[in-house]
Length: 166
Image (tube, rainbow, N blue to C red; front, side, top):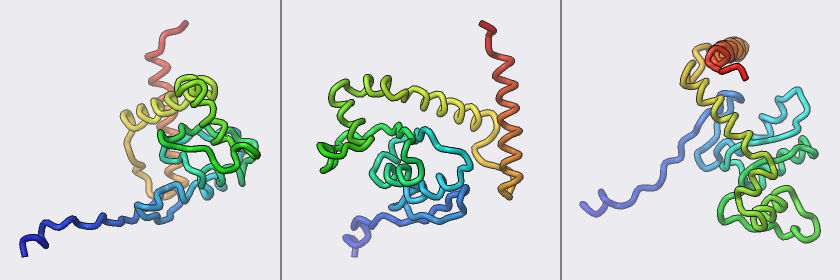
């Protein structure tokens, strides 16, 4: 039947492998389910977490709070976000961010929390991907780490050559 051919198809659920963890996640889960595992890999104390907007939900805030309660979360809340039920009694970082945006608008919040550093990080990653590659050529994690260190060294040298001395 012709109508069956043109019926809306359900969205495919693909599994993606997170290269850092070697874990599979579905499209619906996304990488937010793996934030806790990524944080567990850090040998250093975590002071600030600055991911993009995909990670702006409660699961990420909870994962960071469990592993680093004093860490500053710098995540831009989504447009239609609302305060939590406990905002009046036990305000969370996420609630405070939402309140700051309501009082000072989005640009005021960005200045208050240092959100501009995120764009510097994004520019560094853009440079890395443009100059070196979007993916690793090595197959094992130790050689990928070496490859990343060498790539960063190359970028630092080339950036140093082109930067004016002031």
